[in-house]
Length: 631
Image (cartoon, rainbow, N blue to C red):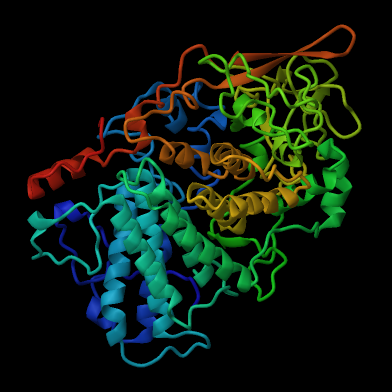
């Protein structure tokens, strides 16, 4: 079954509005009964159920990384100059239930309009499940069966529910069967977060029980049993977390599910990406990672920038579990160091993210229990056991993932960008290959890079994103970003580590963290840490390993109590101001990215609001409040 698309029917399902869905396709000629009268048209209908998977990565509105820039990981270069876009409105607190920058935005590459989008996907999957068993005949293509298609619909529905939960929380009903126009919506019930997660797991288990669903797909972008395990792993972790558990302890269950999911993935060939496979590109670039451990940095960078052969029985990349079909575009021009037209730098990693990378002896730079001595993060509370970190030489001797993920002052880069270059600049700028002197790029005589509060091609923080940029990409060699990795084994291992530490299995948690660290040549963490100490190390490892992959936004929220907020992490974001001294050395001074706080740290921003029109209709029909707190 090829993932091609034909006009079947565009279901617009909003539960509270009781919208009527006509039994005809858009051309007015084909009925749903006709579609489900044969396998070929039923397969095409299932194809349309895939339409609601989001692209993510840099494909949020206006070519941004969305949740990465709304967390403490980064600052969006467009937030000030273009304050009307998503990040600018989030930073300014310009959000309401009737007009929210995350949801009330054009549905660009599947990012935005989440309530309508995912409910439509759920409705279509539920309808497909209600009809597929009665479709006569069998598929004619090899490897296809109605059973496999049923498994795919279960799994897609589970994924759409998981996305709704992540954004909106427990304001959801459970839909096992498609609602009819004559249903009594006044009896609609809100399920708890845990109940919705159990339904997600039920759908995943239904898919896993179907023999015809493969663990890997040789056909691009079709869902697999591996995805079912990854969804289970992630969502039971979310259900057990303080924000979502309703005061109940689900950590033992989260531990058992994650242990089983991880074992099943390993037994079916999934493993961490640990070998440099494209030496002609990445081996020649290892000198640019600035560390004796540069081979590990090259491996890590290759994993996120090389177009691997995922859809083969035995792929080189055995870590990636699921990517979506939409590409990331020319991110060298919109999300990094900029390019020949000086468009924008996009995601500017924060000083807080830079602080999270340890030194190569395995010591955190800051005290993990209390990383800053002041509210605004201008006074770092250094780890007293760290003897390698030097505040006036801050980028030496760091975790290889730092060099693979972030361009910093003194970084090297192979590609040429088509800029005119001048040798001097007081701003931070990564120097090209063979030149350790900082430079500043110009376009039409105007500076385009370096730290700057408003210039789009400059950096707001003193840093540029590197993690997703191919080492050879640039204005003279436009290599696009690879498809965003929605799920990978590294996350599942960290999910297991977190569930293990919270349920008291400290040795297993330590071993899982050390497996992640070994991939990049980092020392093992101590094996005698207390539960509280190990929890801090697990969370810190998650922050570093999954940096800028959209995890941090959701994790800092689920770690909150329901009445908590994000004032310690998201209220103030800092940058590194760098001065070149007359003797050629540099001085480093922390400063705020802007002098006013980001407003999206308060309690209500733990959740996205249900669109107000929907919340009003739901209240009118059921007599219950379906809106999230504070909205």
